[in-house]
Amino acid sequence: MLVGRGAAEAKEAVIELAESLGAAIVTSLLGKPYVDESHPLVAGTMGHLGTTASAELLGECDGLLIVGSNDPWTEFYPAPGQARAVQIDIDPATIGNRYPVEVAITSDAEPALRSLLTLVRPRNRERWSSRVHDAVRRWHRIRVARAEVDADPLNPEAVVMALNGRLPGNAALALDVGSVVYWYARQLQLPPGVQAHVSSTLASMGCGLPYGIAAKLTDPARPVVVLAGDGGMQMTGIAELVTVASRWQDWPDPRFIVAVFDNGDLAEVSWEQREMEGSPRFPASQALPAFPYAEYARIIGLAGEVVRMRDDLGDAWDRAFASDRPYVLHFRTDPAVPLLPPLSTAGKKIDVMRAALEIERSEGGGMAARALHLLEEYVAIERDDSNGG
Image (cartoon, rainbow, N blue to C red):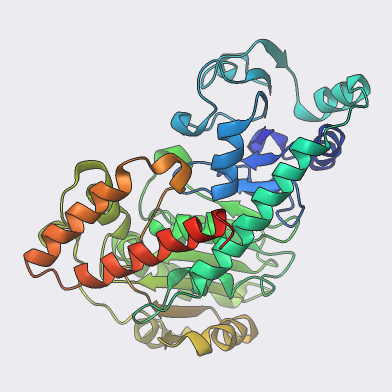
């Protein structure tokens, strides 16, 4: 089952049908907030930024039920002709837009899924459901292992993992565009009911703070967390902190946390360039100037701190949530942490990335040697686990 935002009001029916079928639940990026990712059948987000489990199970399935999704990562769907597909969507123009569909159901997701539940006949699907459980368990081992990889200064995956268990159940989350969306998609398990606002197919860089402010103004009694890279912060975020400083004293809940992932690089562009074109990073267009985000926050009457050590991550998040005013967490993260697609779909891309990094290293690229090392470590984690290592 590929579940998108259109299933927002059908969360229970999605789980019930998946359990009846023994099917995996894969989500689009927009569908992530509407499933419980702790469920053993939930394989996580699909696509280049998605999980190993989602890629494996979409690559193996012979039946696909698309519920309220128009996810554009078409290369991560089953191969054409591999799976027989049914699609539920309120918009008939969306049906068949991404994958060939045999049965189209134009409907809200909830009543359509309830009707399908009455038609599911008991069958022994243990072989496939066991495969799903195995892929999901393996993915969770992989994501934990990757977050534990040492980086300089911080592994951004560890930063997001430390937010798990700390995000209030009534919070709203806002994300900017860039590598931070990868870490969110893979490492953050949202509490049920937590909204997440992302730019999705528009990929409008600089949206994080504006989305967060809009969420806070919509419901000032809810805490808001913004995850943003230094690129997005330098496009709009620094200026929008002035808006936060001018408004926060009117909010009944002053918690407005801005987590800045500062790696001095337009990291998603750098890694995409290495992967897609075999081209080394071009510092003239991808390097970002240093900026004291937390100090700036304090100057304008907010609170904040710089975080450089892994052991400080949990306490830093706790201090931010306990603050009596909006708080900027300036995380110094490592641009050498790779943005890998799931290896089952990577093909020759890993070799292309290696070649680009070798060019960077030969030209004196400061992070290239470390990036090569981390690339190999990330690849080894996934391959070793897949091979039972």
